[in-house]
Structures are given as C-alpha cells and as structure tokens.
Length: 265
Image 1 (cartoon, rainbow, N blue to C red):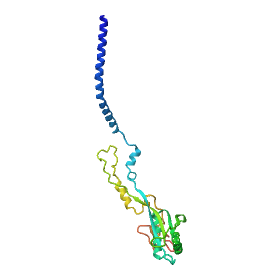
Image 2 (image 1 turned 180 degrees about the vertical axis):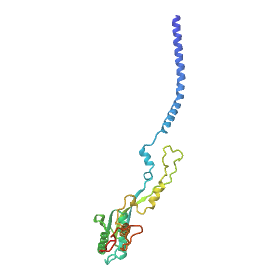
Image 3 (image 1 turned 60 degrees about the horizontal axis):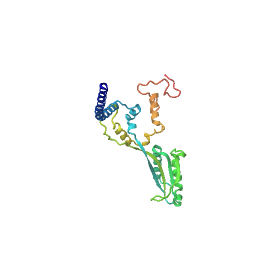
Image 4 (image 1 turned 120 degrees about the horizontal axis):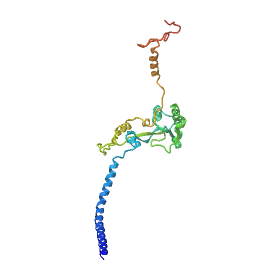
C-alpha cells in the first residue's frame, strides 16, 4: 500500500509539473513570436547591405549615354513648288529653292525623296515641264534613282497646283534632367548620382545641327584642291608660283624646281 501511494504521488507531481510547464511555455512562445520575426527581418536587412550590383548593371548606371539616352523622332520636311497655268516651267528662284532642298535631303534625310506631281488634270497639264525640270535637278545633284520616289498628289494645295517634294529626317529628343530624389550622402557602390551626365546629353541633343550625325557618320567627300596644293607645296619646298624658291629651312634636292634642260650645280 505504501508503494502504491508513493507511485501515485509521483505521478501526480509529474502531471502538475507538465501542466505548469505548458502554462509557462504557451505565453512565452507567444511573446517570442514577434521578437523572432523582428530578429529575422533585421538579419535579412543586414544581409541586404552586403549585396552588390552585378558588373552589367553597374556599367549601365555609370554611362550617361545609356542612363540618359538621346532618343529620336521623325519629322517631315516638305517643299511646295507652285505652278503657273501656262506651263512655262520653273522660275530661277524656284530652281534655287529645289537645289537647296535636295542638298538638305542629302545631308539630313532618311529614306527616299518623294516627288509628288498634281493629281488633277489641270495640274498635270501645267506640271509636265516643271516635273521634268525637277527630275533634272535631282539627277544633277547626284542622287541615285532608287533614292527618289515619284507619286501623285491627292489634290491641289490651297495655292493651286503645286509639286510637292518631301523627305523624313530624324530629330533629336533631349532627355529630361533634374532628378535629385536620391540622397548623395551614402554611396556604397561608388556610382555616379542619378543626374550625372544628363545635362551634357541634353545640351548635345539641343545644339546639334544635323540629328542624323548622332546616328551615323557622314560620308567622306572630295578633298579641297587648294588644301592639297598647300600641303604639297610645303612637302616639296616649292613656292606656289613655280619659281623654284624653297621654303625657309627646307633643303631642296639638286635639280628640283629647275627649268627643263638646265644643269644642276
């Protein structure tokens, strides 16, 4: 009987200990839940400070041409050549205007030069000679046939029958600057600030004369004959008049610049 009472008392004490432990663990776990979450978030934020940018992203953020790119839009340039009713052809001023327009197309135009003659019967009769003159001017400017497209104008302009010359050209669109939302103090990545280089890109886009030069380089033209003569004269040491006088400090080889048949000293 004594042994049974001892075992019973031990089991009772064990049950009471478990109950007390359960009462203690429950509130403690509820109190440690938010604290554990806070510690986890704090640890993740600490790891975030050690994350670095990859090389491609860092190079992109450090290049103003890529961070603040100059974009382009298309604009149509058109010239309307009015026609006289009697079909007398183009005047001298009209021919000069067409020559200048074609020269601008060669420098800044993209695509083809559109030449549209009047579509109405009255305009077609008065434009026949003028259209031939326009085609002669275009051929004289050195444009290949594939760079010119002929078309018919849908209707006469408000000034009457007219030949329409048009082409597309790119226009540089400057980036928007002035973004100072970033704190310039902490700079762990050692990268330029957000607005770095934007003003340079904007000034370049607004000051360039021919926007196509920012896309493709211009073709090489013929060199000036005057400059070639001046450089050749300095190289040979001869005067431009052909008298054979050497430039100061330049030794002239025997026989160079002498008259035909003259013996060298």
